[in-house]
Amino acid sequence: MTLLFGLRQVVYLFAPAHTDSRTAGPGGVASLATELHDPVGNLLNMAKPQEFFRPAWLMRLDRLVRDSVKRPLAPGCEPRLGVWYTTRSRFQPYMGPWVEWIERLDESTETDPFALALLARHGGGVFVVRYSGSIIAYIGLRAYSPHVWELTQPCLTASTHSRLIVRTNELFTALIARATRAAVEADRIPTCTISFRATALRRALATSGYLQYAHSSVYATTTP
Image 1 (cartoon, rainbow, N blue to C red):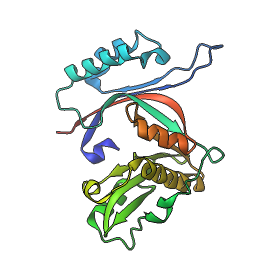
Image 2: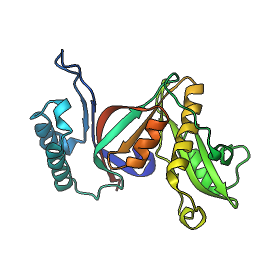
Image 3: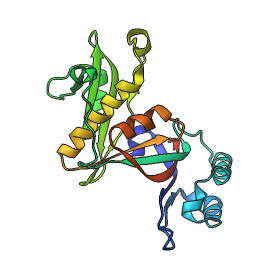
């Protein structure tokens, strides 16, 4: 998937956020580019998966990756991400004023080049808010498997700040809830991966009934 957007993933780490103290606890998953097998692999072998996502270890990982890769890292690379999920029974719909503003893009009738680009990147659907004919906010769904769809983080476009005179927290909650409803209606489990620094998004996910499932680290570089 990253190659489609001109990126090469070099590090992907994943470990459950909660473990059962009565057992040894689940492991984790590590996917590393060939040139990082030894340096990052040696670091991973020094800690259990459930212990690795602590600040000291993540600082070492971040420094090691940045010192080892030869190309600039892509925007959005993070040593600590949270993977959140919800289910049909936990989902909390949004019933506020943004409901009437959100529309699902339709490829058969859409003519806006930006909207068509969004549709090309999100196979599960795209939900947008328009103002004076321009898209000012959006969220997408990516169908990664027959059972799980991932919500991208809700985004504001470049023109939003001069046109939208409201707080964004409720807008993000509305977009997350709308995309989540589409996923659960399609009998998919929706997930969303966000930075631990994104406090507003964490609150929006919790409002919609999401729980944190796992920790993750993702690093990618631009392709030649």
